[in-house]
Amino acid sequence: MRRLIALVGTVLLGAQALGAQVQTKTFDLGAHVGQQVFAKGMALENGPFMGLDATYQLPWNPLAGLVKGATFGVGLTIDVSRPVTRGDQFPLVAFDFGDTTFLYAVAQRTTLLQSGLQAVVGIPVGKVRLYGFAGPGIYSFFLDPRAMGKNEKFSNSLVGYGGGLNYAISSTIGFRAEAKMVTYTNFDRGRLDATQSYIRDQRILDATAKPDATTKTPTNMQYSLVFQYIPGGK
Image 1 (spheres, one colour):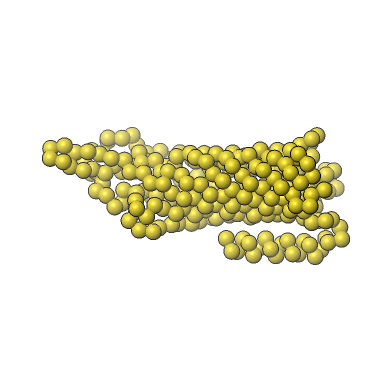
Image 2 (image 1 turned 90 degrees about the horizontal axis):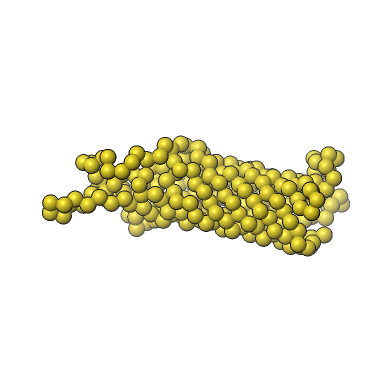
């Protein structure tokens, strides 16, 4: 995260120095509320998320000569959610009481933090603005210490890309409807397994259906409504 902030700071300072007399700097600030839909192989329940983004519209715009009113910017995005693992995707645990054996599926609530750097392109279409974005980032899972028996987290890189519609209420306030795809790298579903501190069942292996197929590069979807604020917007 510190590297992303440093990189964005360098880009913004360079752009301001090069184009200070060409265009007044403009920041777009967005607050997201939405639904996160995970790939089945990740073994996570779908759920809500919240996030923030900040975009600087660059004075240098490669689309300026092609589309009137087009914008090009760079920015940061960050979001947080609290997804629960799907216990049926992991081994069951067994507890024996006399002549009876009870099988349980174990789930845990995690904290998922995603952050990234992105390039944003926008074009006006009537009263709305279409925009698209893409960029690299980092995802981090913070696991439940009560379920895992210790504090544990894991992180890796991601790629986020998507687009949406932007409707301006005034020169400083607007709303966006956005869809985003997030592809993880080096994802290991086994690290979400909370049965490690229990006695796993090794006798009744067919008590539940086989887990969904997993992959190291799952792609998740995020759908959100965004409140946008433009300080000093014109």
